[in-house]
Image 1: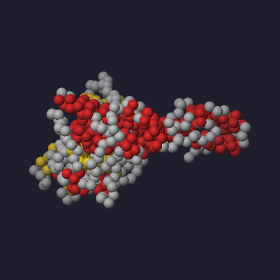
Image 2: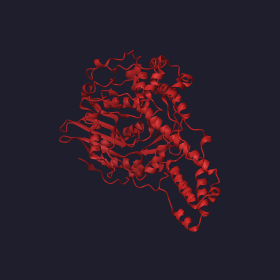
Image 3: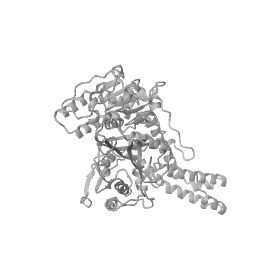
Image 4: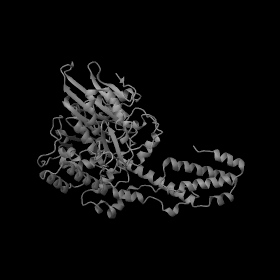
Length: 585
């Protein structure tokens, strides 16, 4: 049951803040392209007595969602009935995209995606849903309750940004309804593109949000403070300290003593289920787990909020095969039974910041987990590879005693995870860099040399002198941890990315070597057929370099084009005409 919204004509409310947006570089974009750079669509999900949950409105009206996607959005936009979420609740979910779609601005978005840190790159197979759910008593309705969700559907994992947007617009939407939603969408359609590294001014219904999207060139662990500028500060402005980070300390509080073991489980891509009382706690905890191995990308599937109606429910809960490499966040008590066979279960109570020092909680055996009412804790028989770091526990406990702000505790925890991940990954980075052929082995007249094969045993030999002990004081079975990691999806994803980057670097060095040759002199010594073959190969390489954005010196492309033009002009007229017209595929 879908009621399409009216055509998106900018309203006076929406255009009020347009001048404040950073001037867009994309004047040739189609209407709604700027909106599409940030959001796929906005949905309103309500409760129908006959149909149950139903998508009531989709904005803009031309947004495409398959029936399967609409069904997923319906079920994921409402908390389970047992959650008892009265009032307003915010959470996030992630679901599979049913079909691939190309946008008119995909070239620009691909370019922006390249400059993002690996953990923030878009995943073409998934959407995020950001939810603001309201449930309040209303005697005028048959059910006795008003239940509705405002949902932002996006490819971007900018959790903090979109939750902030919803906090600002949702309460007013529930009063003003569709005309207000139309104005919101029109505002978003005047936002500048999501360019990493720039301070962006994003007007939304009378306020301006100032944000900065991180880039892959930022030093890991640093946060760039968004500065206020005077010309736009006459309007209400809010500077967001982050677009994507969750409140790490708050999320890990219920499992305070097990943070290092959880880091290992996430690093190794182990199947983990988070059982929580509400979607807010479940989604925040899953997102915190996924982010704890940053700057490594978590390469398996993760669902911040997962329900029994999910299309992957059967696939993920079957007992006929081992649980898949996935992190699930659930709230339905039914899962305590269906996921009993999962090896690692994190049970979260209501998340509150501790007013006193948390008490030591032992890891519990899985057989003790009977229901979702079981006590909070980690239920697993997993034995960590590394000895526990008592220092971080003491540091955070001291922070609780001294009433250190939660933000400061999160910074300490994030730095701890970052240093742990870097200590683990640096030896791998160093070894993989050694697989690169020497630059002197690159000849312009031969194909670029291949990378040497990754050898697990050769890598293990490097650990004795250049292992994690150089940067971490943690003792334990690092070798065992590496052996396990090398079999994980996270290693496969990381190594695939590294291999692609290094192969592209070899291609770039090969092109630079070609540019330094006298190609015209070479062509004069060879037959026309060989010369034509060279021109076609060079054109193809130029096309490939442009398409893949190979990491080359700025003038390499121009030099190569000049070489091609010079060789063509030295050929007979009939061949010149053909070669000048010949493009590449």
